[in-house]
Image 1: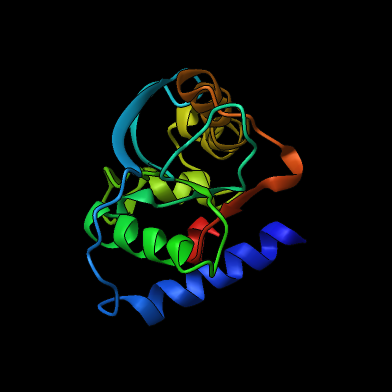
Image 2 (image 1 turned 45 degrees about the vertical axis):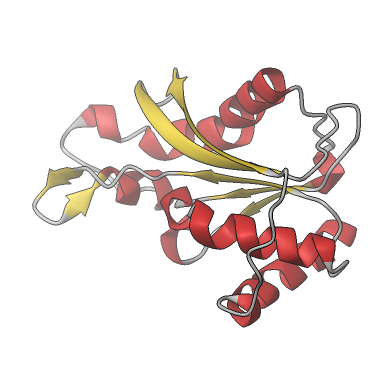
Length: 167
């Protein structure tokens, strides 16, 4: 319940504060990284925001966003820093995992196979893409980031966020 409140506040405030924040120097981190996915058999980029004074012994609400390429440092880091410093939200970790927009056939990308259950193809290697993508998001990316950044993952404070097909 607490995380849902944070998530709702975060995304309402992101739109409200866009352009209404001061660029105050912060020790928060916005890192662009990637993972070699065994489930998807490809490299996926992601962005991760770690709050100022990040302490890997503390638990933070974690939001993992689909279509993470929408999360850009110049907007999100400043806005989340402002929300935290103004005590609108408590410190969070935000992870934006990029989607694969590579075209498979005319007008169809891997993204459709990843987000639409039952989206079938004559290419049988694509027919498991939905379940492989689900495993990538719910297990592989979480486990990888947990190990790499020494983050404590509390399943009750972990939320996946997306809209359109990514939701």
